[in-house]
Image (cartoon, rainbow, N blue to C red):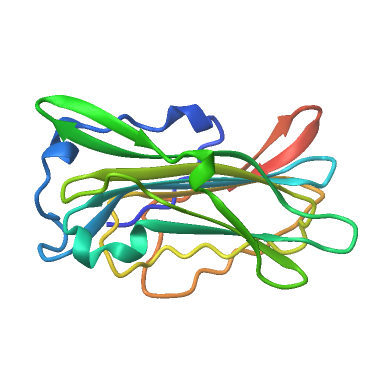
Length: 207
């Protein structure tokens, strides 16, 4: 099933804990032969009064068949760089969870395992692979990008070739900034909230 929820009170540290049921999963209840399943995916784009956008991305995936889920074990973050300004990663945390002998073992992606490269004149890339992944592992990454480019926000792809249990998208921006949300594809939001509130002395729209 599919969600787009827009709760202004959500904080990035409010991501749900991994449950025992998720650790014990041996197959997807949505698509039995799926090699992996997205357990929780979260986006929040917040535009400040200084016209900078903070992009928060969190993704948690259950690996059911490592050999068939290789594309999800490597992550690439692409950053745009203009002539005078550029996007930058403000925070990055990625880890693998395994249950071993009744204990949860966490393997973090070390900075030394993060590969930075230049794609072309305007785009840079940061890549990393998850360590210690096996059938039954849960992987997750969480990063924050600060960007001065607010005219067009990055596209968000909700449809994957693996099932997705929960997706949440949030857009928070001053009323003086207008965006049009275009939803393309077969999936539709199951819940949507749009409202305007005073925030930091200004009116903000919450999607």
